[in-house]
Image 1: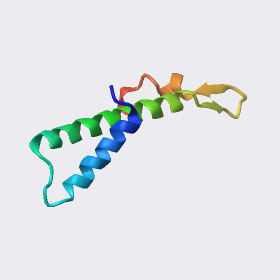
Image 2: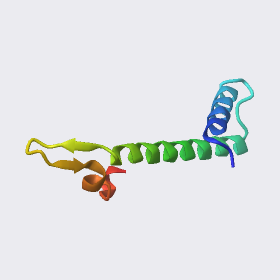
Image 3: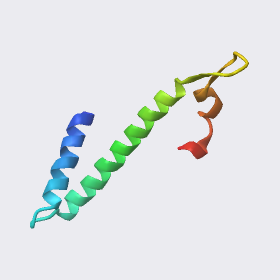
Image 4: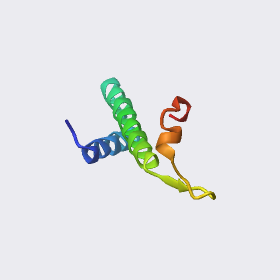
Length: 77
């Protein structure tokens, strides 16, 4: 399986090819869409992991973990 850096490089490669006169083949268009979807899913998972580890110190001195408070809320995805 390709690393994230390799996927990004391929996304960029396909983007630049799409801007040429030659354009992308139907297979390359499908690959581009798939790679972009994978990248977005990876980005969201990474961001969710970061947000889940944020603690808020409340005025009353208690600590609220955002992951515990909002992590199970499916509307945030």
